[in-house]
Length: 286
Image (tube, rainbow, N blue to C red; front, top):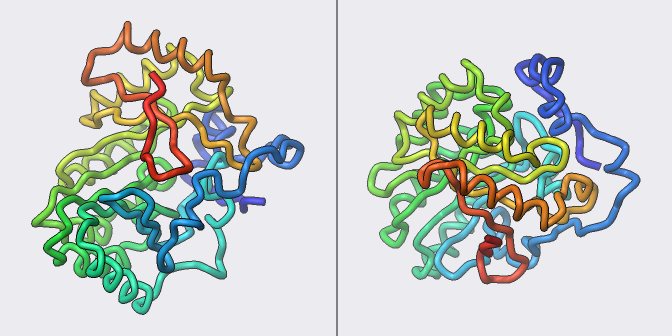
């Protein structure tokens, strides 16, 4: 079972907002409903060297760490996130990654995900120094939820690491699931991240009992645009074992998204997608 990890910042929010509590506090459904897969996206199959997943033709996923500031109960990587034994990558792992990338010049984009790469800023800095020097690498993406989980950790070390990226555009993928997450400390963290990136794009997972309402998502995506974050992905929750109770009925999701398109401007409306288990990338739902 995925470990429980909650920051003092989240503890305060959990007391006020049920929608946030459900994201981080375990429920009985995690054990009672074990349908789904430990690895619904077949990431283990496409892991070419420790921490490097090469699934799509022109881009690769890098997992620098399996730890986060806090653990979301719906995490796709429940099987490995919070695994202290596997922990954080080493210099030897970075060597192996670099060798693989040099042998595969068709890889043009690197996506740092996790675990949260911003929780290991020194390692992230080392990795970016190495990989940004490769002439084939044209785009860098970094995914994080640190701004929600523990915004104080978005500090000078994090910004120093991100500012290593100079030759390529740097896109930060910031996870938001509910508008109640957008409070002053998080807004300040977002403003800091904006000083070090080309663009901030949001990812939001469709979650039953948390944000599966037109009004809720409309408020979230509107607030994101107001703080300078472009809503990018509205994601169907992956069928991961222990988290299927978060999955919203597909037809209801379509109704919700149709409602969003009627109410939101083009810049505020994300695309509605689901992850794929094969090499065909994300698939548009509507």
